[in-house]
Length: 57
Image 1 (cartoon, rainbow, N blue to C red):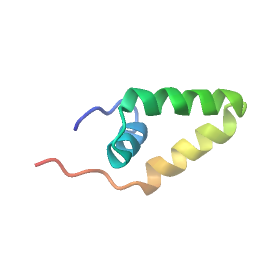
Image 2 (spheres, rainbow, N blue to C red):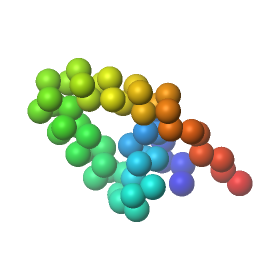
Image 3 (cartoon, rainbow, N blue to C red):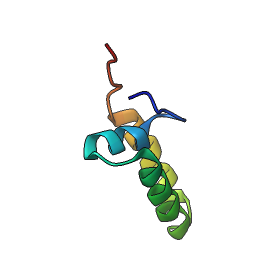
């Protein structure tokens, strides 16, 4: 799976949870907009730092 846009956080979460990456991105966008954007942006940056990059073979 190489469906990475910015940091690959949503695609990585979708892969881990077995969901469609588009569904996870839409859910993340709605959550960010409904929480006035800042907490969602902060969480994304933190997850980008904490989630290890996937090895492709």
